[in-house]
Amino acid sequence: MSPRRPTLSVLDLVPVRSDQASRDAVAATLSLARVADELGYRRYWLAEHHNMPAVAATNPPVLIGLVAGATRNLRVGSGGVMLPNHAPLVVAEQFALLEAAYPGRIDLGIGRAPGSDPVTTYALRHGAGGVSDEAVTRFPEYVDNVLAMMDAGGVSIGIQGRSYPLRATPAATSVPEIWLLGSSDYSARLAAEKGMPYVFAHHFSGSGTAEALELYRSTFRPSPELAEPRTFLTVNAVVAPTPEEAERLARPQLLSMHALRTGQPLAAQVLVEEAEKVELPDAHRDIVDAMRSRWVIGAPEQAQARIADLAATYDVDEVMVHPVAGAYVGTEPAGSPAREETLRLLAG
Image 1 (cartoon, rainbow, N blue to C red):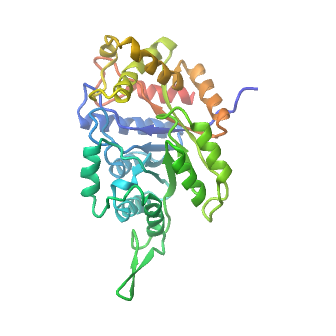
Image 2 (image 1 turned 135 degrees about the vertical axis):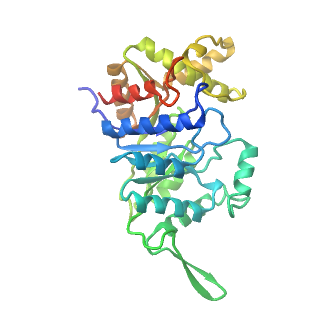
């Protein structure tokens, strides 16, 4: 018996190609989100990365508002907000307001990583309205603050013997679904301790997934919001009518990830024809091959079977696909047809 097909969702970093301006990348994301909505995907999450020429997902709340406004049924969220970069009240206000505008459709995924280089991280944290130098070490406290301030009752702060109420919105009637994200066992432990849903960054890390999920499930403590562990899997995917075309479309993103992993200068993602001209040093081919082996790359039936196998292996009923297909020379800049085709072919 073949594994049951999982529910599908989408992760989007809003990639920027060498033929695109930022406005084109955002337009392509809105088009991709509409396709996901039409096909019945469950969620559409947007990442937070800074000062990267190949990524336009710098501000998840702004992008979430754009995507939620352009779609009807998707749950739209962050994958994730890097909480140490921001004052907890600001995050709580942003997502409480999004939830008020799109009730029942907003997810807040929270991460601890910087999402950028050290210089940009310094600029973010010292200009983020009250973020302290201990932001990373105070991460559990910040998570508690966000949870409390988005609650309809808010929190009370004692100052000079008086109690002051503090709420993210004046009259909240619902709150976003809140997840912890991570690529190490730290967030797995914290999510289990707090009784929160948790996602391991399998699409980025590629190793340690089974261990992190087992740690989360085995140490999970039920909370009023969640009675038992809840998680899903993230995976990079390129699907095309033939395996050969899928391999061609995957190469631009593989080269971008190779540059990131080997400390090379980052640039906008090259087009397929440009990527095919790049010769990697022999010493680096193993790096690319190792990454490629963890991705879903292939024709529809092959890719669908691989995703079903991954869901069965990690015991999840939802897989969040990061569609990383590149584009050919002459592609309309404001579109990403190969990424859209990946979603269509996976949905069957």
